[in-house]
Amino acid sequence: MVLITRAAELALVGANGAGWVAPVGTPGLDSPLSQPLAPWAPLGAISDDGLTYGFDEDNQEFTPWGLTSPFRTQITKSVRTFGLTVWETSRVSVMSLQSRLDAADLVPDGEGITKYADTASPVPDRRAFWFLVIDGDAYKGFYVPQGEINDRSDVTYKQDEMSGFEWTITTYPDEAGNTVYHVDKLPVTPAYTGS
Image (tube, rainbow, N blue to C red; front, side, top):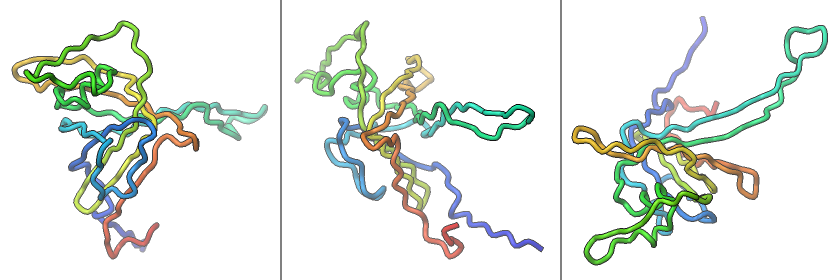
């Protein structure tokens, strides 16, 4: 008889979470239990679809003459993305990302009026991101040193639907060649042996 061990505490449900944005060069957090401080700015409420951590990879298979199975595979593309929909569309940090503008250009005046324009010639707009997924005592932190929104979905304004900005954020390598840094807190369970 085979003994199968299971620990529900080690299975993660994305029950809660949050996201922050900061200028490129802002260091990541050392712990997912730490509260991000300025210059980190919160993205506010995220839709109940949560956060999607995406993998886009291509590879080239090499099959030698006379064989029908490859004997080597070379990865030719490896991209990490994050997908989410933010609901606080009037938050300055969110408007800044959606419009590719500096947050200082979007601060309302004394009467609450903000004026800006969409450009026909957008320029690259890389930022640092920090995402946190929480499930009970389990925390998963994702630090993106350089990321950029490369896909924006249509925005719907409708009486029976929450308006939101749906984004796909592409990660880029930093000076060390890394795109995403993981900082997790695992739950303490007697069944956990590290393997």
